[in-house]
Length: 54
Length: 397
Image: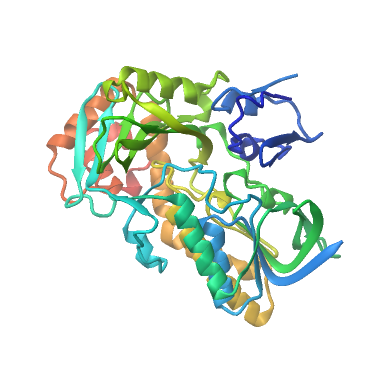
């Protein structure tokens, strides 16, 4: 997953919405683990469109 | 690796975590409260509006330090512009304060510390520890860059919407897209809004959710929006609809933004079960939030308090098994479940209505003489006039 760090508000919304618990928010850094199945839910929900599929 | 031992480790120093830590410590338990951020209560992820009644129930004395505004009432508005003003005399239980969350959260954490809880800042849980039987036995964490273990008889997951601790511990906290609201909020200044009314705008202005304007005094307010997850299209929907709302409302014509924040809320009636062996979930982490308003502070404080009380009892026998922790489950369900389920179903219906119907509903509510105005009485009135709107959950009204 690609994170646009200029847009991300570090709100953690994607973390709590990820069906695989594959995202971790470390202050201002979003980390995606290999559990990510590229379902796109985080992309769909992000309030500022900071996420995209790679 | 540095290892800490305690009776209870609480993950997250929001209102739910601090209340749980306070009641555990008060009960004589050796309690550690960890917070991953560098400041409790900031950055903000909240609209900061609360009702008043519940504060007494959880033993919180209203304090001017964290009350930003004492509201006279609320304004409910349709996208078409029809407004219904609710005054405190008629809506005592639903009207309340606008908080300063960064001060409120610190005040609750201070209460926990004064009760004897130890607070570890900049400490981020990364997983649960499991004992030889495979049961939860604490958390792994990074404390100021150093890997540590906090071994505990019970873990309280108060990690908010992110709700990861529960999932590491085996409780599925995944939400349906219908039960997620994607939110964004601006702290705006130089705007012309009522200083002591919280405003809610419903309809196509915010698909499946609503726009809120919660005044913070001096021409400043939290102006935000929630959009139902199912209706998001991956195009910064929350920001798009909020910007559109602001651009079309003359009250914001000279407005400027001081702060932008995001944050999600769940709008389901709570988890099927918020406990497991040696593990309790509270507040947003347990998805216990009012599905209509998205308000979670009072639920977090209540569930935090219940968890602390139940763990105090469990410590007497040393039994923190799921069976023993079901006392917590029974407590929060007894107090809140009916209302959560009813408001969850009402939310689903509300999300399906077009602007015309919402407008008619507000006109009707305005004209109907409802004694005390709260969600329950509103639904009761709506049930008589628009029975179709409450189809499927009439029994709860």
